[in-house]
Image (tube, rainbow, N blue to C red; front, side, top):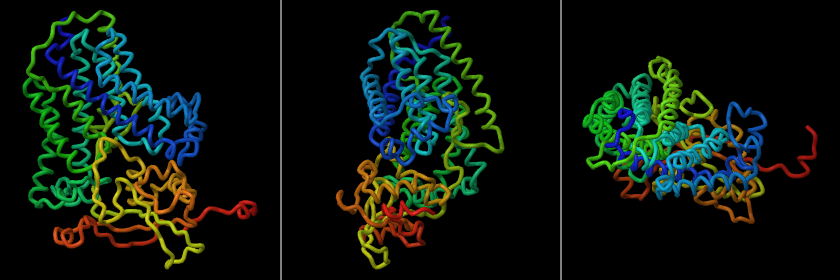
Length: 476
């Protein structure tokens, strides 16, 4: 079937596959380096406890069969190794079926991690990576030209990401319709980047123009993805430029980067396609069968787009094959931060010396300038932003975090930039206080060197200590 493939997209596929492998590497690397404190055997939300109460069919994962920290570590590092192999083009050195199986490996590995990751893995970019990673399995390698139906499904993903984000904004916070959301967003976003302070201080008319341009990019341009070339390439290129602007203005894990990766698959690069043989019949049958199934599963995400009660970042099946996306339907006007402090004093008096724990990405010390971490994802820092929005987000993991700090837990402290206590002398008490943060002005920055100004609001968690052995023996 000559219509089945699009040889002119061979370079688009190559760039897409290598870039997707880089995103996979960032995801597996984050899992390998952070899991022990988050979901390990002594983690804040342990996997063994999770799989005891959640059935396999609701969250398919190899860790339902067996879990140990050593096994999880090997699983995550295997994902890193496979990702490196894909970056190097190992799939092109294999026969078609072997390349497809190789691309299936990181998808299956990461699915097992996401489905037991609980709160730490509850964000849209996890499902987006799995959905796009599954499509990559059927995109083929150098033995065949890229199949048109898979390229179409990648554009369908990109359409849902952008159009869904545009609709959730128009249906959500009024500031999107008034073009004023960027008066606040760069200051109140979950994890500011090194340039966010400067973005915030751009003139307000420029911010209004940014929002208007965003509406065009998310509500009009996605439709052009399904038009003939070169219009589709122009539409995808505009989306890539918009995403790069977002990369510069904040730290959004790999959300922006994987959106760029998907958009690259729609770009027709001006190059001569190499001659390849026609696809084998079994490959055509498999691709068409999978495409038919995915289109059938697209019913609920498509219905969600048209619904007045549109939801963001929802998976409709446990394999995360077809999902709904969206971001920042509402914008916070004020930034709050939960600051954790400890003291070595025997009693938690206010006049005791309280020392602050410093995180890698989330604001803390007003003089500490934000760093660029994306596409690497600092999961604890990100959840701390939600806790500051509302205590309702401080589930059992927050209590467990405080306990780990009181124990000077090595794996937990590795998630932080700095602990104020020596490894052999944990604090006697830990408390949490809520502060209001705002960016400093140009004048304040010159005079103090601080990019943030903060004001104490209230106590978030009173001074807390570990129970003594005698207290644990007392019946209540």
